[in-house]
Length: 65
Image (cartoon, rainbow, N blue to C red; front, side):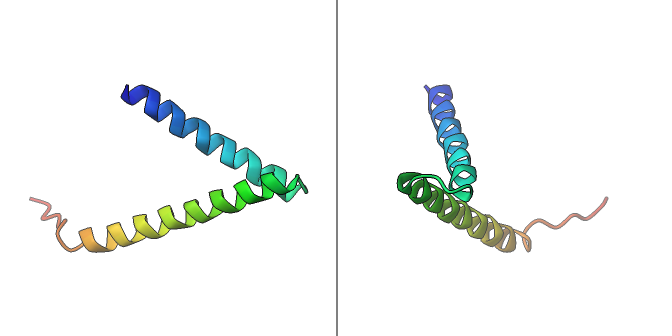
């Protein structure tokens, strides 16, 4: 079941990327909307990943011993 969910997410990501490329070449209105949503979600993921690294950087010390 988890594999099916991951495949579904992968299909959505690839479809979003296709829409971004298509919209940059002047696709129909629905493609531009999907592309904007995809870019917005990508920005949210990027900000969340950046904030996750900042909060975890103090607790992960490498002593080297």
